[in-house]
Image 1 (cartoon, helix red, strand yellow):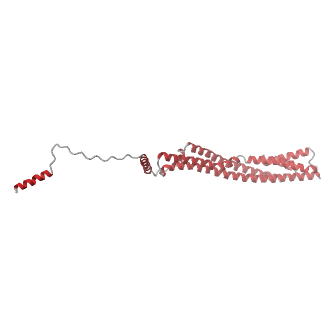
Image 2 (cartoon, helix red, strand yellow):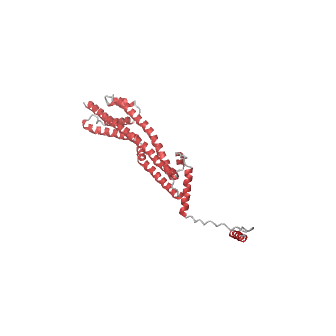
Image 3 (cartoon, rainbow, N blue to C red):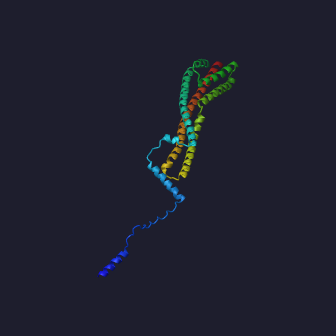
Length: 286
């Protein structure tokens, strides 16, 4: 039994030998090498990192002033042009309101005084006291033609009546056209703003969106938070174009209507004056 116990003890010691003092431990196995990332994978990783940064910084509001400041030179030039057009159109609104009201009042006062006259001489005496105006210049032109006819001795001749009426009407029509042309000054500019300002703004928007997409391609990011400021800034040009066109069209329509009303009143006055001259010629001929 003693011999058998000794053999078992020796077998156990051989199966699990103790570590010898001073022995070097076996080195740990090295990790498997990581395969290199491709160019596309690195770009995608950078894009995800940029998106993560934008989303982490999200929630900050972008003001209209910041959008305007960060516009590219082309968009900035478009905005400045449209801004000047808007300011000029609004200034024309106040100018047209003042001019049209003044012309309407002068025409009304002139007609009220003119209709009190029963002869050419009375009309001339009354009108001489009135302030200068477009309708008064028409009267002066017609009256000057009447005086020329009287100087020639044709005023009381029935055969020369039609020619006299035609000359008077032509002289008054010339002054009327000049007066209406003065009232319609800058109308062509208003029409041009109303027709072309939206297209100018659209050009700025297209250019800005093109620049924004080029920036997307460079940064390799598709986050809406990244591209939104550039696109929003580009859309400012369209808004500016509409802001310039809408008041220009409204002012143009207002001025055109007032000029048409003034022209109708002047046509009526020309008819009244010719009728007064015709009665005066009949009275003197009789």
